[in-house]
Amino acid sequence: MGNKSVLVVGGGMSGITAAVEAAEAGCEVFLVEKNSYLGGKVSQINQYFPKMCPPNCGLEINYQRIKKNPKINVLTLAEVESISGEEGNFEATINLKPRYVNENCTGCNKCVEACPAERDDEFNLGLSKTKAIYLAHPFAFPMKYAIDADACQGDSCGKCVEACEYNAIDLKMESKPMKVNVGSIIWATGWKSYDISKLSNYGGGRFVNVISNIAMERMAALTGPNEGKILRPSDKSEPKNIAFVQCAGSRDENHLKTCSSVCCMATLKHVNYVREQYPDANITIYFMDIRAMGKHEDYYQKVIDEKDVNLIKGKPSEIKEVPETNNLLVLAENQFTQEIETLEYDMVVLATGMEPATAEVKVPAELNYDVDGFVIAGPPTPGIYAAGCTRKPGDVATSVQDATAAVLRAIQSTVRR
Image (cartoon, rainbow, N blue to C red; front, side, top):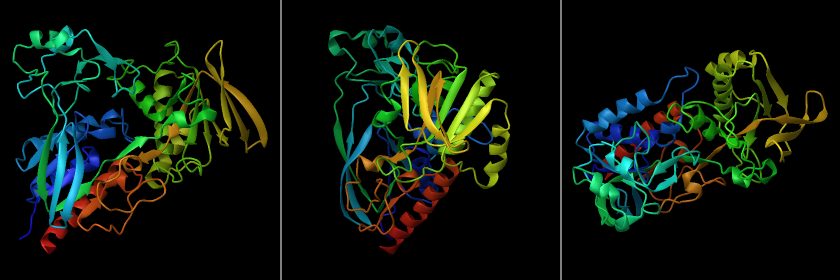
């Protein structure tokens, strides 16, 4: 029998699924995640569509499966630096970055209360602040604090060390390498929301009231920057006239070529978020076409039948800001009326697409990629398999199915040896 251990890179829904399925099939698993917590993008989502339920219950079920399975080795704040060898006998070098918090941590929060330094909250996309020592979010797994070395004042401060009763903080921690020998590798590093600052014609990154769809998720979440209240970033006022722009940077020869498949449904969900908080708000959706196929058709019909929801078929060419109010002027050709219109809004939400993490950070082995950076079939390195949104855009259910299929291939890979 060959080496039945599996390296899973990426701790989002695809990676978690791959890890638990492989371990429950008898494989030893090394699950590597670059963040201080598991869950990936799913942990940032407020609600799933179409049931409109929170994702934390599904994540917690998987976290319990991880806790109860001794075959799963979870390595957070870790990145794979190199891969050598061949199918059935890979050696991977993993860099373990310092958390500065050890296993004694009980999550009492006294360190946070004592810390004087602040940092931008990455989990909330910089829409709020945390202390330099922080818990990424209330449902983080592992439930253990971490220190941002760039924000921490180090030994010159040390207030967190003084406040900790359990000797859980070690400001002298350093990065260290770790080598693992595995039979196969599943690469599931997932996706990131396309950078809105690249959309200069939409004022992304320049106009404060132009936000991404992921930012909308965090605004609507109770654990978000406004404790669940959707507010204009510029003045924290209640938006009453909101535009959603579909395919922002997607299906575009200058940006992402592919359709990300979930953006239309995400926007329909966001319309629900707005309508629940602001029953009288005016909502406009600019679209090329709405892709809500199969079981999602009923959800689509329900949303567009809501009052004051206006659909404009046309992709805006430009968004301008009104300096006095920070309102936005959206210029687009309305293909329904065949007129060029400029309409004013309090806030604009850009439905940015899924850009794979592999567009920026490639797998340290020979693999094939498409024009957007997704790993494509026919790997020149047998034994390494992409899963979930590393391979193609998709929703959570599709990613779970794809990760399970990758596990089957990974197990077969080791058996062949």
